[in-house]
Image 1 (cartoon, rainbow, N blue to C red):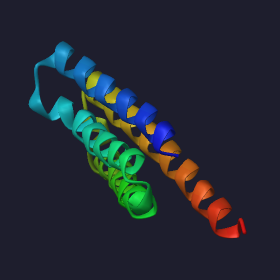
Image 2: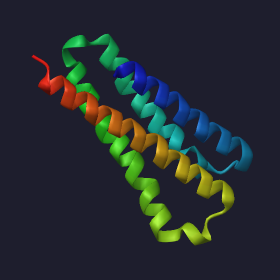
Image 3: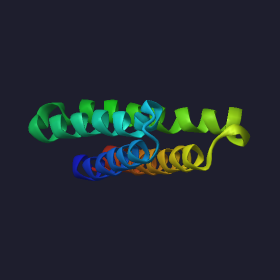
Image 4: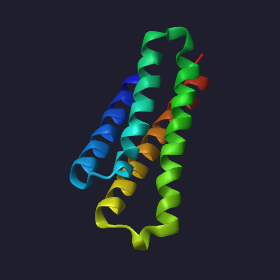
Amino acid sequence: MPKTTLIFAFLLIALGAAAFGISSSRTALLPAYVGIALGLFAGLALMFDGARKHLMHVAALVALLGALAPAAALVIRAAQMSPLALGVNVGMLVLSAALLVLMVRSFIAARRAP
């Protein structure tokens, strides 16, 4: 699961960097911040096998927050968002939620394994 998390971290960083390149707004970097945190925890999980479970649970919490933040922003002010902001929020929501679903499925499978 850490390798999958690194892929999603890279995608979130790329999304934030692309949005920042287009708009030059610091808030466009929010997906990149989530991606950096996910990459950090996934990298640590690869390095420290004994703490992998705990680090991946923290990464799941980051993914949850990465999904809730744009979901709340979309609910509150989707009509006032620019097309770029709307796309970035939807992209961050989809990537974070997909990662979270994969993590939960992995946690359940690990729990059921002998």
